[in-house]
Length: 97
Image (cartoon, rainbow, N blue to C red; front, side, top):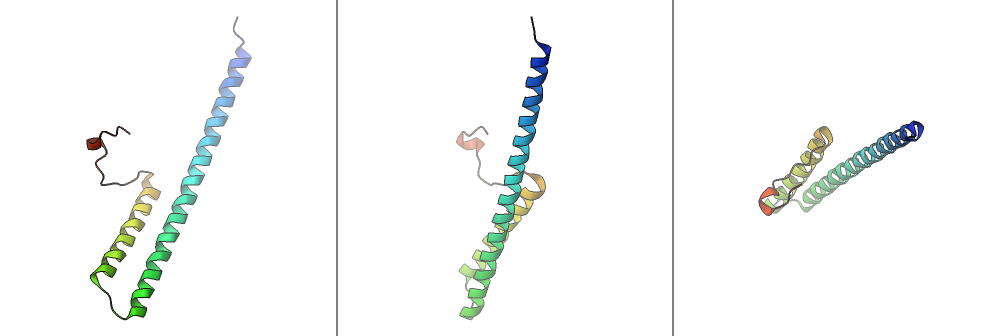
């Protein structure tokens, strides 16, 4: 004998838990993206101001600015697409994510 009300209650609880879990995960993603983006921008500005204060710029400084640019682009792409960008060949290393 099957208790229909119990199955319906179980389904409702499962849907509620899934929705709440999705909300928490998405909220964490957005907060983390904003934090990473802000820290990257702050670090880039501070590095640039250090270069200006030093009075000259080396190739190392330019490469550092390109790294900050790339990090900012990666945050922006992930923010718009929810997909991480990576040049690491995970499949070749045996990772099956």
